[in-house]
Length: 156
Image (cartoon, rainbow, N blue to C red):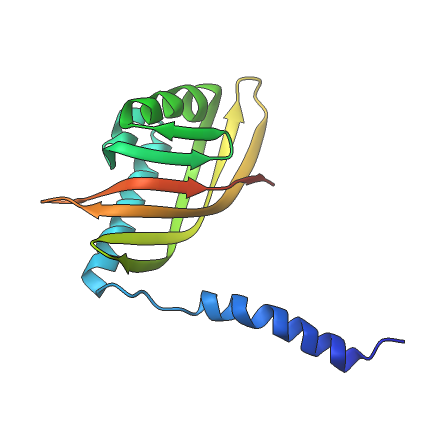
């Protein structure tokens, strides 16, 4: 029979780094963290309106999206993908981006966390998708823009 106390210690050893990561604080000033989270809320709003042009207004011209479906380069390609996949083939709604961590990355900002949304396909089937993301955000003169987005997804 296995020793329950050893199994418990092994579980704590595995969970401790994950818990430590979840408890990390933002390394940017509170104003910047607030601006990043406001950007995420505006991004969600544009997604929930299924407005590809509004979504890409939050990204740089040379943005790179690394997705489970492939890699997209440039605002035009990303807008086309949103229009065709996210808003055409699938009607997404209830998009929610939760920036759990916002850190300085040299002159840029790194935001990471979780995202989720519901969708309905062209056949009326509904589902939910969620995953993790990492954004690299650049500071523009009067706003912040997403330059890189790396995310995964799972249907639940």
